[in-house]
Image (cartoon, rainbow, N blue to C red; front, side, top):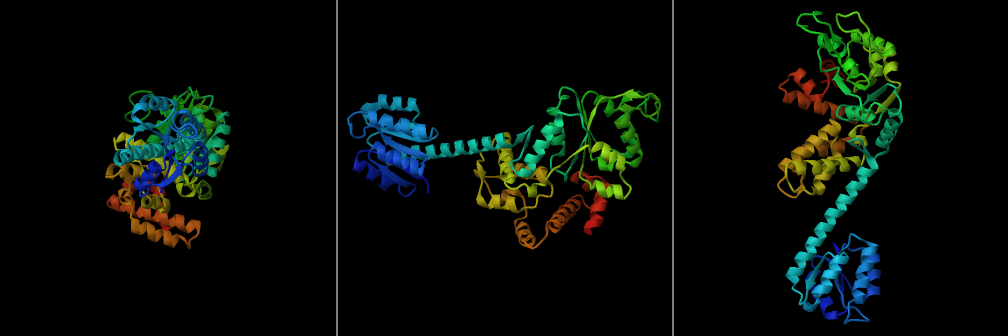
Length: 451
């Protein structure tokens, strides 16, 4: 129950307030400044009602103003409602000028006073939540990424260290963990920040087009090549080239990429001229590169060339209280975007958020909160708004108690793959696109998980 401090020299008024407000608040009472300050420090009430006429000078306002000043010195966010007589309006306005929340004139009408008190508490809670979020953002913000947990703080530290160099970086992590955000943060905090940031998804472009996309082509080099076109590597000159899903690059192109990185030149398809390129390369993958090297699908020398510095992003399920922080940030973002006054999550919704495995990581959480804001019909997001299978999540939580981390991860991956393939009517290519992986990678996952 919320604590409300009432300060008045009249025992009758104090009792009247306690009788009328005790159902909604824990009412603390003080008759003078010393008692009031002692209770204020001990109980930290968000809202106070204060009579300016306090002993030993009940007929004046000096003690009341002193008490108000001390309250606001201890807690500037406290909401102090000044209660005055009809002839004291000027003093009441002076109190508001000092920082009092509002004033109320005697004789006291409980129903009207209740409205003022309730609004004061609502404002206090909103301000408190905003301060908490701002504090969390200040602690964990890195070029659009947010994270308080030790693993994300380590990622931010690595970004700051590597950004001042020109070393190649390999970012590893599951789909949806924010690998491109890390690449952009490295670029934005580097000496190349004024140059271009060029991204290319090596797993989303057919093999016969990827070479041209990356290195460019000369006019007439193949059917349809009606003009000479520069590749993404040339466009990244003096900037950063981001190679997403590098693990999906065909072996034939890996050889050409390695040469380009070693010699800092590109040769267009159909061309013989070496074109100098000065681009910092940041690559990313959600594949097991070590396994790909062992199976002969990825060149070991290219791996060492790309991974001068490696950054591993933790999955969302391993980021602890970052779940709550991110959920609230997405709530604020999409509440504003959809013009909906959604102020938070009820306990059942937050419990569900913590129990869910989030195989799609931050991307899945963002989409989930966006949907919840749209579906919500109250001021708080409820469990049903999230669109998660509550019974399945509860059952999963029970099962996971006796599982190893590897077993729990495999179960979560299997569930999301099966669900996505079903949504796509059994079309594996479309499912792979929806999951953000290549078709060969999805087939490998299905084989590994026995789907």
